[in-house]
Amino acid sequence: MSRPLIAGLDGSPESRAAAEWAAREAALRAAPLRLLHVHPTVVAPLLGGETEPSWSESVTASEDSVGTWPRMLRETAEGLRLRHPGAEIETEHRIGSPYDVLIRASDEAELLVLGSRGMGGVGGFLVGSVGLVVVAHVRRPVVLVRAGEQAADEHQPDPAGIPSAATPCLPVLLGLDVDDPSDELLAFAFAEAERREASLRIVHGWNLPPYYVYGVPADPERYHEIAAAQAALLAGLVRPWREKFPGVEVTEESFGGTPSVRLVEASARSSLLIVGRRMRRHAIGTRIGSVTHAVLHHATAPVVVIPFH
Image 1: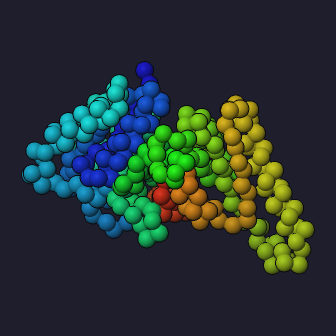
Image 2: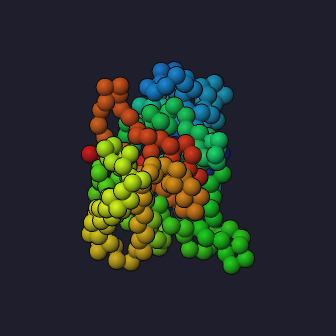
Image 3: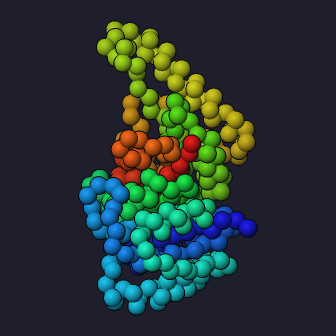
């Protein structure tokens, strides 16, 4: 039996958008969907100084909320079943630290799907403390879906320029580091593009070695040599996956500079943005990585973070 997709649900608009996205993804995968509500106990966050105990920063531990969760779960599940006929949807309620419950639940999931609380300064996520902790610690892929996300946002406009879920999907976008590659990341990206019958756009940003930086303006040929070598590395990593997924149209982009800005900009024209997180410990604790951190806060498409060894 396939693992379920698990969507964290707290009744907020962003978590409902995450549940809708998870229902669409579950249909693509022919997988079950579990709606999980966590009633929080008082906990101390693992990252930063924030104290709000919610992945979408909207759950409270009031007595009123204890009595409303069964109805909220039931009504959300019923609505999803109406909009997604044939979907296998179950609900679950747990009490405890949202950090711990969501991280433990992710081990049972094919994907863990969470909502983000609104829009950031350049039109992206505002990820709360719980969302960052979960992304940094889980061993399964995590998807963050912004508030207001709709199926039509992931598709090309119709011939009249009107958003429509009936048109082809926008490209799937992958941020890939050729110096720290991951088969898990590439396999996920190609499979998602194939499921959506969408193209795959792979973006790789690279930096010049420090000892070349000052000589680049006087030696453009050396710059082009490095650029060609980086593009060749990218092509070599992608080539076996092109062969495994011959039906997926792939575009490769290798350029000098940080990829975070380009990924954020391109997310507005993508159905999904995929980035990786290497699972390793640092002296100051588990870290997400600067590029992943940037896209989590500013991308407009749903973001998938793939942990890998």
